[in-house]
Image 1 (tube, rainbow, N blue to C red):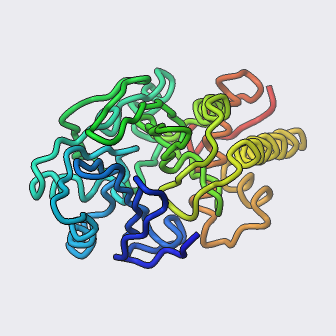
Image 2 (cartoon, helix red, strand yellow; image 1 turned 180 degrees about the horizontal axis):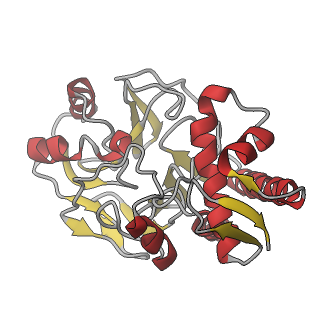
Length: 298
């Protein structure tokens, strides 16, 4: 597989091109992968961050006579959806997604968010509003392509994956280089695990994440991610068996293999596990499963 270079269009398959955005970071790795699906009338999946150079690169990736007819967004983090308005203006193509940034939250997450003390919201495109909302199982087609939308909440409530001919463009839900951040109220660990099961059941032959290289053994990678999350959960429960603890203490004790600079993101993952464990009545929170709470085994 050709190593990605920012701004260059790489053909991954006869009907699939990738343009890497120039936004590397600890959370995005090399940057965001923007995909162009089809020939002639083309769909863009995850337009990427709102950078003029990336807009120019996406448009330059088109062959003579081609046009962008659909803009599909897996979820509304700014590194995925930020360029959507400018790309829509440049092409006239509609933006399609599950919904705005608060769509898809569970009732429990919505209730916690309403208290105003949950935090989160890192990188969320709060102004995002698709032209067309896609439900789970909806199909979208162009002259040479067709995708099925799969609602896969977990990393974010409005997260979609797009399935086409045995391949799944999976956004941030499954990546080869890292596990996903699951930060409440946008992230939901219970939903994330259920969505892993959904993707596993599709039996795709390859996954195309929005960050990093393609996943060529989806079943193994999905199973590995599920084991990783179950191990984190077991570690949280083991720490709480020693006595009550707050979020900072749990994060420091559990993420011993993670650089301290990444502990704030790690703490959001721990909080998501704790919210899920409280919902499943394995852990109690005083007063509620919020960042300042004290947690104990039920």
